[in-house]
Length: 241
Image (tube, rainbow, N blue to C red):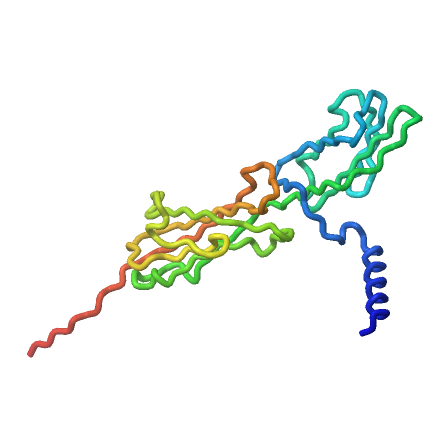
């Protein structure tokens, strides 16, 4: 491939990139919201402090909002609503000074807010009834619900609890081991006593180092009922005349 051909390809790529809508270009979230979480966006204009009479204009997802006449610091703040729809949302702001001798500011860079959908998980195992000698090969698996679509970089991590005969087990690891990248696997140990068990996974969002509001995140739970039954020992045959 010649240098000229390579340059032409780069020009074509740049042109196609220019044609893409802003929403098609990946944007790294500044914050994640979950449930009814909200945040306040507070601007600071380089080299300028708004004064009474200035106009503060926020642009949300590409649409300019009605100008706010500045009277106090709170007038410059944008309150992201708790009712925000799931998905990626962008916010920028500019100030138009009341003094006609001053220039309007450029719009700020976008602040990106990602609203996460309500989490939903499932917990499954190959069966529901196991003999005592089968427990060591019994794996209970937690996973996000098939209908749940998550943005890149977001996952669910799991915490396990259990009951035995309807009574909470203080330490579920006495019954099995937790493994998997996000603790999604619970494998029973050999010799689990015969009884009715309920294994419950709680899924919680993990978003890396980016803040999530509220910090406790949203959670979802799902359970699997397992019954361990006694397996009769081998019969001993006696022979008599």
